Length: 505
Image 1 (cartoon, helix red, strand yellow):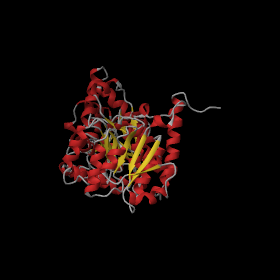
Image 2 (cartoon, one colour):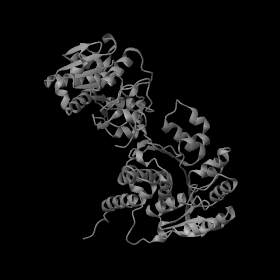
Image 3 (spheres, one colour):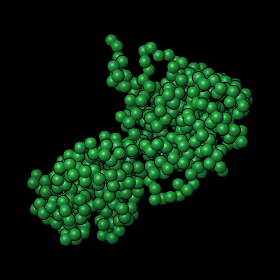
Image 4 (cartoon, rainbow, N blue to C red):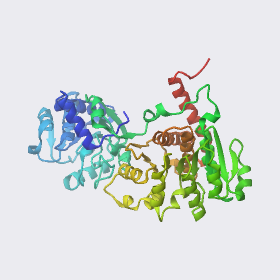
């Protein structure tokens, strides 16, 4: 269930389900029942439940939940924000079934309630929350009472995750059929609390008719393409990656990337080092090989050997003309490329020159910008506040011709062909020096094994997040190698067992 549906797509899914024979009120009743069951998991609900309801279908889900809880014997009150006469369709039917007390404002005894069910707006909100609704949300947030959000915390834009003026801070969120982008993009994700996805009777065949192209980055998205080693394989069949090193005072980043590249499964990895840094690199490298590479001509010569099928370039590279020429030389090769850090910054004054070269080549290119690098390469996209993070990553992928990994707590991966994924497993302590070099290396290691670029980049982002989870708070980039070993090992064991080549006894 890793597809992400925009509010518009979710509305279409509802319409198609109704067209296929499921009445809308039945979908609402199942949704409301699920909300009630979720509310009962809060021990404090026994003290009383306050349901905040709007006049749309989100409010209808709240009316159903309120009646279910009333029949279970709980004290329940509904606060309807909006005029009753504006209720229409299924929401009006659900309100007619509600047999309890309804008021039009928060009660003075708000604190006697043990839980608030937020059924004001849901994912379809497309305007700034103001007036009575905004005041109600503020009061609930200040109260500290646990909140169960229906579909999406009210005030969060379901398409972008943006806060529309003010938004509920939920303890838990129950959504239906599939998550929405607002559940996985910040700041929306931080407002959701624990998220449950409930199936309400919409057939999965609807997804095929909708042609969904956006996903949460789970293993199911890329597991079938992951290069599980075979018993008859050998290192030469798993690719040979090159990682370009910077000068003698900037070698650490390349070594972090090279180590991750090898750990991710590349059969061989070579650090291409300028002569001035050879001794520094040699003092630290064992399983990773070393080759002298002083300039763009040297790199071109090195990459004439097509067995060298993946290149990671940018970590610690420097931002001078020599570095720019090295990137251009790599682009002339037939190798898959990961362009990170300085390899992107050197084109800040002429990003189109980079994009033109990428479009001209057949081999894949992955770019891994953080927000600052992205803004320099795509200044128009970076300034467009009407676009979600997924939107801008998708447009950047089309404009550049590369698979784009736009970093952050909600890292987005987008390919030129139209698919996009949002990574959700990265802990905040991964935001440390050298962490991005490790990520670039994981991508390079998977590309070396000929994993398709979108799948390789998505798998790398997931592995990077899992590595951070294993390493734990307080990690430094030096801790990531051991943790990556564990993350890759567990993944391969799981996928290998699935493929029938797992443990032997």
